[in-house]
Image 1 (cartoon, rainbow, N blue to C red):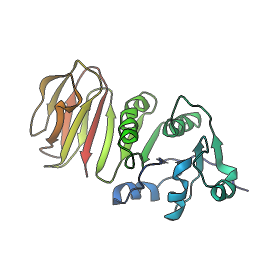
Image 2 (cartoon, helix red, strand yellow):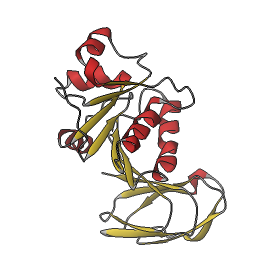
Image 3 (spheres, helix red, strand yellow):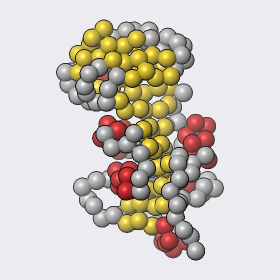
Image 4 (cartoon, helix red, strand yellow):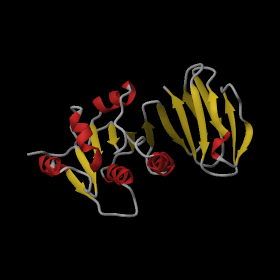
Length: 211
């Protein structure tokens, strides 16, 4: 009989485009716990991985997979949140304080944008959360931070809160107290060395770093 256990590191697989890049696939291979949104199960299984938990309203899972994994289905009919948020809440319910999200972009641009923006909300609940795509990683920040990088790494800063003042250190195009009033202001920058810093007192920032 299948006995569910919750081990770090936790990887959540959303129902977007399944990744092909080595970085998100490495995270999936090394996961202690794989949580699938219900619509992602067939792609996870097709590529030789096994879901430990399947979360969602179960409207997108194939009947054969629902039967095969009946002992690890966790249904939620909450219509006020999407399946990715349900998976994050499932982590919290089991005492997890960090997660890596893959498969959350692609297919539909509106879903991609919504899932990326939700990272700021997840950062208020989890100690660490990141979203990996085939091109790079999205990291939410709620306060000043120093990030690992490499010289020439492409970096974009998206500030979800208007009026946030950000100062940068270690970027090719420095931000000297720029007050953000739109998302685009911090895009298309690049790192100068092996770290860079973003300094701000309050706000919700989502950082993209190219692999």
